[in-house]
Image (tube, rainbow, N blue to C red; front, side, top):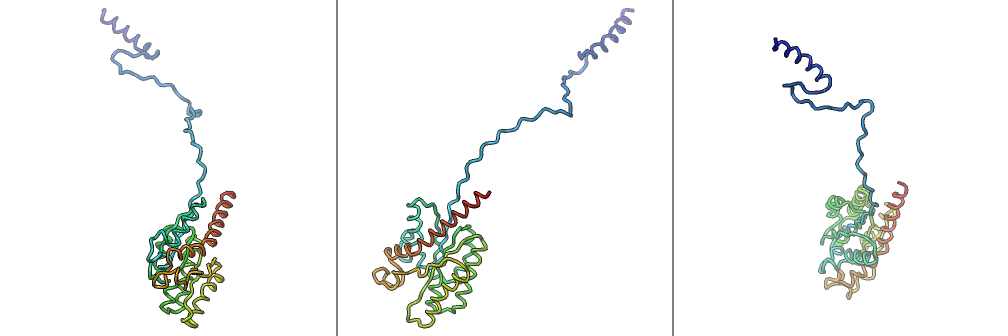
Length: 251
């Protein structure tokens, strides 16, 4: 009898405990969860976004594509005119990076073969100082012209501006020397590229400013060569900087 009463009481208590959220004897523990309406979820906290730093203008890269006159044959590389120009511009607070890609004995064909590597550096300016060895070897003017045109075309296509350095030959080369000399202003005009009329102006043919071979400038001669190139290079760098500022302002 008592066993029957106990069974009836337990049957009554278990539903009451369940309805109140209590745990019935022998039942696994339950964790209470508060329902959140799906239609109005709690907003997730957004991470703080740091302020963007002011853009820093990239330092323009200038690559000098040339032969032994550019490489500074017989001198330390820091005495060649590309290194002199970089140092002079930096001393005036003008940021610039220079790569001297001068190779002794190089021709316009050699420069064209190397232009892919040059453009792989993503230069802002390419200074083309080639052709002297072509002329001294008497290579066809048409061949020199074709190579220079292609170097300029590919450089521009890659987004670089071009500065062309004019070359000349000794007068004893006769009519060929005249045709060779005239090629550089012709290309500059037709392709609309800046031209240094003669790289070795006030240096070529002056014994005291050239090494024993009479062709390659001494350290003092390289300083004059740097002066010949500098105003053209500075103007192009200023134009490049002005174009970047204008683009940034428009954005």
